[in-house]
Image (cartoon, rainbow, N blue to C red; front, side, top):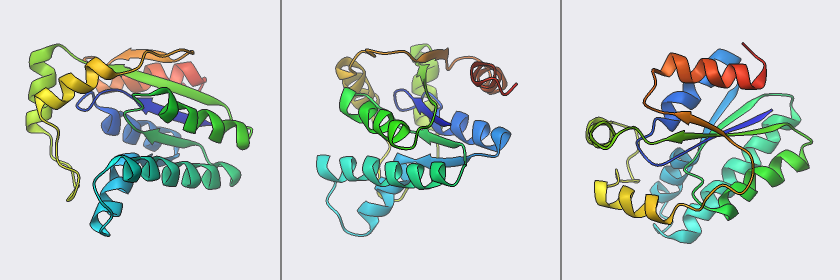
Length: 169
């Protein structure tokens, strides 16, 4: 199974993905961490490097799926092209695919999360609130099925909802 956790920055994608991966004993892959490593290796911070990070995670996901592992990916996935990456990976590996989209919490909570989060990323800067708003305005609508979950719920609730959706509860 390929489980893709999506949503705006600050919705808890990485936290949820890590918790689900622990619960399912799955492989957790983060596009941000791969992009951070690419930037650390000297690649420019641009669109091409972002696309390359998605492709590197796709390759790792496919390799792990071929070994029979469940894979949990966390990435913003704000465009149809980004989502197609995971659709193609699941099809190539004949794996079940579930997109989970975490909706943004109320504005004050979302801003608090962005301001207080600390990640191990050295080369991917934290987005400003204005950048998150701009990304929200350009976020392409989902044209196919996804599990829409409220990121304002406690993490245990969100994880349980995902487990129920995949029949692992």
